[in-house]
Length: 229
Image 1 (cartoon, rainbow, N blue to C red):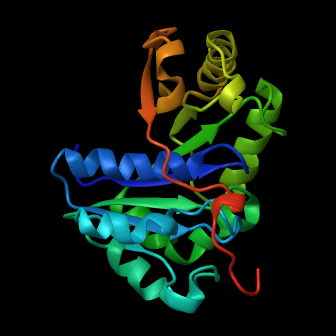
Image 2 (cartoon, helix red, strand yellow):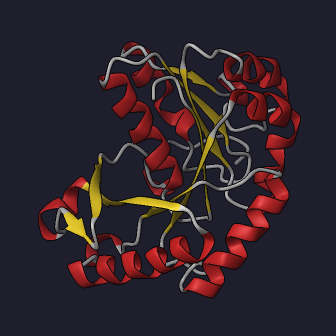
């Protein structure tokens, strides 16, 4: 289906912003008109707003604070976000903060989101705290649904240990998340790997398909110094 509204959430370190950015790029390459909205008020570093200039050159609109407000919260751009969500002729991707406080930013847009229809993708790395097993993932899922007042529809596996990632690590993550998907009756179709580790991860695990992510976001120590942070 074209022109979806897709909300991306995930705990700190899950890789949800990389996934949101790559998803925007994927739909753009399919010929869809894409808007990427940075609603992450939790993490000051790994944010989709950091690809704004590059994506605008490629025809992907990025809505996020600009200039001296680049690393600020988002109330000043709420009307633009509301307008984007209401554009049913565009594919809209929301990159949302990964804890209850971050998910509560969705509250001011919830009527428009429900009216339009949406997918909500929870990105999970089982090698991160608070999402390492089925019980923790379900607890996180329930907490984020309660805070956002919306239902998660898809699970996305991003289990990795960066340069220490192995096939076995990813397979274990896929198995854990597959069990959660069955228990919660959620869609689970894809697991992720960064392009650097593509060759060591199989294309299919338990019938799920691999998505290869390009690495867009800089680590904090790779970023220029920002006054006040």
